[in-house]
Length: 473
Image 1 (tube, rainbow, N blue to C red):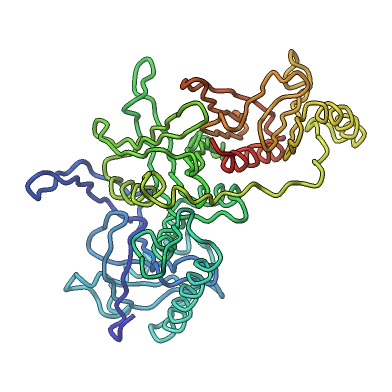
Image 2: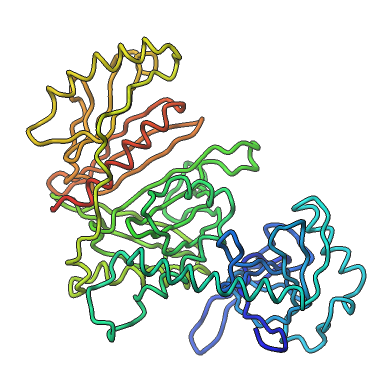
C-alpha cells in the first residue's frame, strides 16, 4: 500500500450487470452476453490477494464505482476505510481509482449509498458494524501482508509442488512454488458450499493449487429427448495429488436442501494429455488418464468466458503431461498410512454393538482368506442385506492392489487397471464408480451404498485412488 492508500484488487463478485466479451480477430471484442449478478449489491466485492486475515484468507473489499466489473477484473482501488463487526477482520471499502469523480473519503460518499452499503453488510452478517478510518485499517494491512509472506514461505518449505523438478536454484520459472502458492487464492473465490465440501474431502497432506469455477449451463454435448441436458454448477480443482471434477447434483435453491456433489478424480501420476478446444459457444477441457491396459478420458464443459482460467490450469498441468519434463520421472505420490487394524463393520440401520461385532467377526476370516501374499487391506465398508436384498450382505474392501466385494468377489478390480474414480454421496443417490480399462476399452463398475454409510465408503474411495497413484503401470 502506498502513501495514497492505493490497493491492487481483484473482483470476485460483481454487484450489478456486466458484459461478457470474447476476443475476435483484428484486436476486436465481441459481446457474447449480458451477465446478471449472482446477488444484486450496491458494490462489487473484491479481494486483496497478498494480504491475509487471521483466518488465512484474503481480505474482502467493498468496491464502490459507477459501473460493475466482471469477475477476475484487476483494478487499482483507493482505500477509504473499513467496516468492522466485533473483533472480526474488517471489510475494506475502496473506490475505483480510474474514475476521476470518485470520492476521496467516506464522508464524501452520498448518504443513500452509505446507507445501502451498511444495510447490505448487515443482511449478510447481522450485528453492529463500526467504521474504521484509514489510519485504523493500516495496522491490519501491515499484519496481513506479513502473515501472507510467512504462510507462503512455510508452504514452500513444507509442501513442494507436485511436479516441482529437482533443479538448481538458478533454474526458476512459471512452475516454481511461489506462483503455485498465489494460485491457491482461487479456492477462496468459490461459493462457501464448495469450499466446505472440498475442505472436508482433502487429505491432510494435500495442497490446493488452482480452482476454476463453472456456472450452471446447458450442455453442448449431451441431449435429453427434447432439449440439451443441464449441467449444474461445478469447479475444477487441482491439488498436489489429483484433478477433481466437482459438480452439484441439485442447486440449493431448488429445494432448500444441500443434495451434495458428484466428484470424478484423476490422479496426476496417471495424466497423459490435457487439451482445450471449442465446443459450440462453449469450451471443452479434455483430459486423458492412463491405466495398465489403456486410457479413459473426461470432458469438462465450460462457458467461453472461462478460457483464461482454463488456460491457467493447462499451464499448471503442462509439466505433468510433457514427456520431456523431468517432473514426469518424479514419483511424488505416497500411499495413505496403513491402519494397524480395520475399524469394525457397521450396519447403519442398527445401533446394536453386538450386531457390529457379529458382522465384523463373520467377514474378518473371509477377508484373510481372500488376501493374496503380501497384500494389505486399507479400508472396508458394509453393504447390508436390507439395502440389497438379492445380493445379501456384502463388504467392499480396498487394499494396496485392488478393490473387491466379499464374500463372492463379484467385483474384483486391480487398481492398476482403474483410470478414473468417481464418488457421489447424497440423500438422492450415493455410489462409488470405477472406470476400469481392459484391452483399451473403458468400462464402469458402480457400487451403490446407503447414504448414512458414507464415512466408511469415503475411506474406501480415498484409500483406493491414493494407493493407485503409487502403483507402476
